[in-house]
Image 1: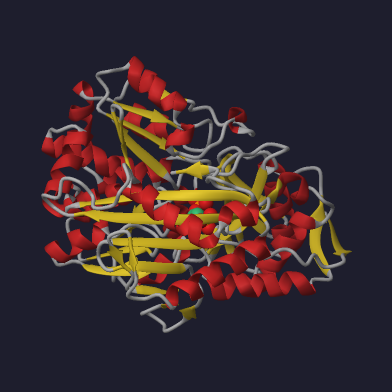
Image 2: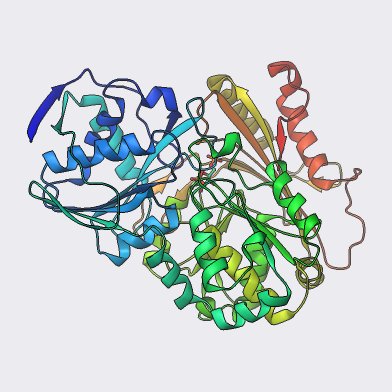
Length: 541
Ligand code: G16
């Protein structure tokens, strides 16, 4: 096998965002582009003698990227490659495989919920040996390495082994191709009471939409085979490179198939969907969407019904996520941590056992069984609660609000903005609000306006400017930040939260939706209409 060292001109745009490096697919197809990023990862994490887990969400360019990684790892004498069958691996399953096999790190090929295909997006992220997404210090080091990269090393061969289960030797490197689903499904069976869930599903089925993405085979294995659910309730389970031209983003705007299936099967008590790489989840009752912030709070409040959460002591949420879970934590005596957006910030808290449950507004929830968010795990949590309470999701939610009050929450996205202009606009808004502390806005009093800086309590590392937080005491918040996952222009996210206290019938704001009233305050204060000629958000979640 011939080993080649290919000279290149360094790429200067390989800076990972909130979750790995995401770019339009055609960008990755440029000559040497994928190889450059892989070499930068290898230069920082090492490759000689290492064990590496490899897999992705099956989107277009997945196969090609896996082939490149294998050829580069073999040329640079990796000890062992653990590759998923057919290259298909959800992000949570990858996190588990890294931990289970005590691998040194993993490379996951996914742009998550972004559309795929030739005209969609592709992405690469890398996770460290506890299965956690690389922290900022490591992603920054990879970016720095990529900017100085002058060559990469790869072997030339037409004869790589097939991605079918088995053991292979390629030169000095061992390659094991493993089942995409088996180890992860075993883990779920250890964490939950499958006998109880099987019994429950016999009369109160779940409808699950895999959105033609990576969770399809997992849903068939776990809900279908191991929990006995009739496969008719599992939809869009065949992974496709372009996700069937759909948007693999589990949120109400893309829930048409799920809603239609729930209507078709009125006996179904729960609906759920997962994203491209299976780490996000959306849960819904019949015609009753559950906001992810509420979902997290309900899971915490009912943790006694969830076998793997019975020892819950601490919970984490990202800063823009509503404070619904803080109220539960206070009443139940759990510690509560607030981190910046990005699952990577939970990793150290989980490793230090400070938290056992964490989640975020962007449809992510997970526990300490792995170091990624986990869509199917969250659905199994909900099934455990429903089986124990024998109520519908709507009844569970209503009872929760009766006990803890209700945190209305919405996110207002403005897509396709100029990044520099949007960034300056947020800064100016923050400065203006900081001068108006104590002022009244409708019936709210402004109490705080500042960028969120985070210091990791486990190692003292500080991450600054993680989003503008505007508080109106416990009553309401407005958060503004730019997305770190978009690939075309910038997306402004305005997160609005309003607490309707227990027994309070009408929110005090003069609007049908209290979050809309807050969003209007932000929209007007930033003068978005004039600045960007946009009179309303492009998406409301
Ligand atoms: C990633 C991160 C999440 C974050 C989300 C959205 O998720 O892991 O923590 O909430 O991006 O980020 P942004 O608001 O910057 O677009 P995923 O599922 O896209 O990998």
